[in-house]
Amino acid sequence: MRARATAAIANAFIRAFPTSSLRAGLLRQIALLTGAVLFVWLLSLTHGLDLSAGFF
Image 1 (cartoon, rainbow, N blue to C red):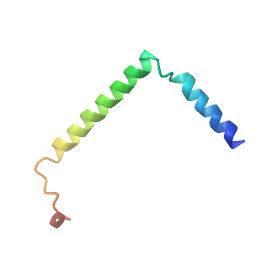
Image 2: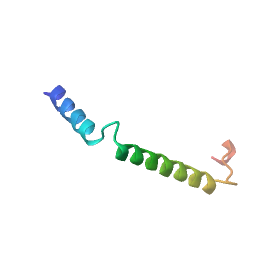
Image 3: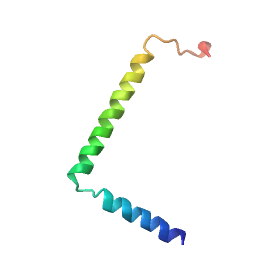
C-alpha cells in the first residue's frame, strides 16, 4: 500500500513538473536567483558582526 501511494505521489510530481517544460525551468531559475539574493542579504546583515568563539 505504501509503495502504491509513493508511486502515485511521484507520478503526480512528474506530470506537474515535466523535465522539458519551459515553465519548470523558469521557475527553477527564479527560485535559485531568489535563494542567492536572500543569501547575499543575510551576509550583508552580518557584515562587521563579531562571530568569533569568544562572542558565544
